[in-house]
Length: 229
Image (cartoon, rainbow, N blue to C red):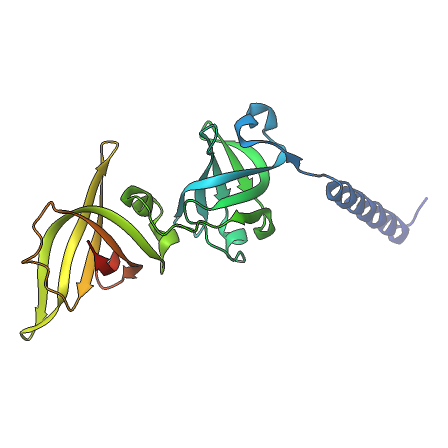
């Protein structure tokens, strides 16, 4: 009969062999390339690779990213979950219009098919969006992704107010407003060193270009406007 020491060595050795064998097997698993329009319930539990254009992207409360990617030709969409543990080491821009390749496990989340990313290396940018022009609803649905970016968008001006301090003009603030698909979207805007109150009225449609930033004093996102037409 094996003594306790030999028995322990045997058990540990068998366990290590099992772990190494499992690792070697997992390393041989290759993701299957699947066109986005063909992803269905048969792929649940499988690791796949697919391509798509980001249509929306937002940061969740835990730092994870929830995206939707689309096949422009077939208008097929699928959600992609990018956990914070993987996203924190990823470098790139996930703004709408960017074409990406994703590799991940197909899962069923709240009765919808979704791709779950495991590591930063599983997201590859194929083509970065070169356009700075975005619809206001696209900006507001993915506002965190636009932080620090120069963009062009449009909408109706509301609440146009000249801001002064000690009699000196600071600039003009206003809200850019637009309705789309029975939803309302609005973005705070600020133009420095200009009084627009004599040139524009509420509900005037304008095109604006500027930089998106977060105004922590008021806890809101805003557009620092460079040009307005």
